[in-house]
Length: 302
Image (cartoon, rainbow, N blue to C red; front, side, top):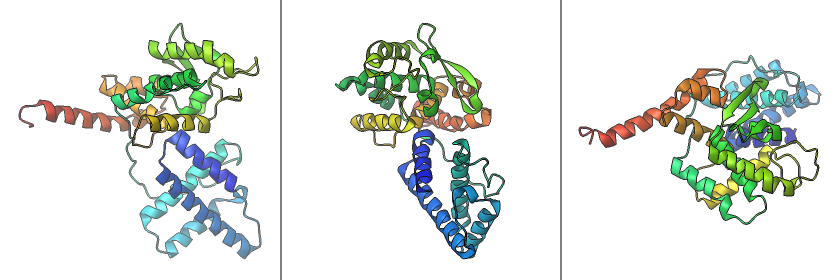
């Protein structure tokens, strides 16, 4: 049970780009849920594996929270934590279905994604070239490709060699629901990937039949956690104060594209969002950019 929670928490940071503080909150919520399950199991004389958790157990838990006078916002967060966890368990094949998918919870406003500036991205992307490590060209290619494409980290680590067309300047990836999309990538990114394939990857690969594009030091496919650690190291050396995750570059890609004049539909296609409403969250950020520019430029605004 602890291993499942630990894997889920790693997923939250690497894939969803959540901060360490949010991670702690999720851990506390799931530990509280696990304690409740244990108490119920002791009372009923049964064993409480996650696989045995069901909708009725969740409703009993919510009733317990209500009896203890938890604030509605806190209850909503705990429901969200549990829903996210069981959705993850289902996607990993540990559970056949999400047992609390239809359990309602109070609606709370979504927090805006937090991109970094163009200059901060530039500082981050410059870091691998300053390193003497063997994997430097790999890391340059990873950072360039993440920012050039806006791919999710899971999409990037799933790439195979034949998913990259450096001559044509595009990458093919499988998004959510195994929906394939082709993403154009600029010359700087394609050159970085080409250099890695020609120079770094042959030194990392141990098995000639390995298809993965990005490899770790053992010659295996790079994992989400491994990529996050790589990014964390370069963010530190770039002296970036914010919590930088692979998802930060996805947010930054979308925001910078819209600030640069890209239309919302194009950004939706590039990000692989099923609904444009998901992409529209970035318009709030670009609106702030427009207001800032207006207040700096208009003679009556100063």
